[in-house]
Image (cartoon, rainbow over all chains, first blue to last red; front, top):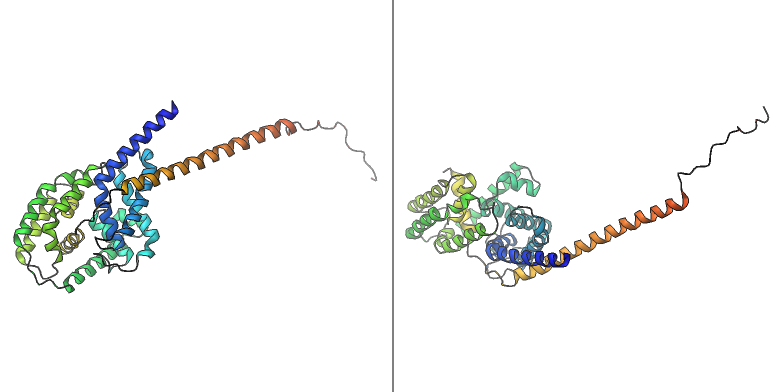
Length: 242
Length: 84
């Protein structure tokens, strides 16, 4: 009897966990790759980090009590990375390779995942002002690096316009809260992000010298996200917009 | 939209680069590791309960044998007074 019930619980947990990873795994792995500073093709360390975080989420699955597994995994990922951050100091050629581990962590939590400043500060055990300063510094470093990389190509206006359109359509589901419910919303965000990557890749390479028309396109996209309602919705909308 | 917001949006766009492919066995590996972790926690918990039970039994047996609450009755007489 007890054994039967335990087996049933194990099976249910395994199924739910698999569905969760299938939905949110891509986005989480991208976040982990950004953290470890690896290029997209070689994500060994990121996979190891993510596996450790996911294993902890699995072990806690029955005791989550309504907490979002995505939220829990992200927090564990951040904690694990903060704990092992010194291992990832060596630049490996990823998007954030030139930043320090701490800057990467703050940037990923604040901008990629759209976690509020206060929550980031609480998760990292830092004062809010410090988080803001690190974030500003990291943003400046990223923009100057992008400018230095040479961005002579003009932004394709069609691409930006299409991205603005996408953001207004996908900006709505996250307004319900990208982080609040299980499984599906992260997958929506991830798929939207991958869908829009084609448009965003060209835009992402450009630096400070951006065209005026393209700028208004980006603004329109962000406003469409903001129109979705709450702050979280605006952030998520802008995050999924590119 | 204020100026720093626009900068952040720009960096956000940079972060949304191409997504790495999720290895198909990652969920299985994580689940296996999580299962082992869960099993280890259960073993530790079981050992803890067993130790507690053993301690309670040992205390009970000792108390039943020694009966530390049964003090010798108080003596009626005072000790003899000498050299006063």
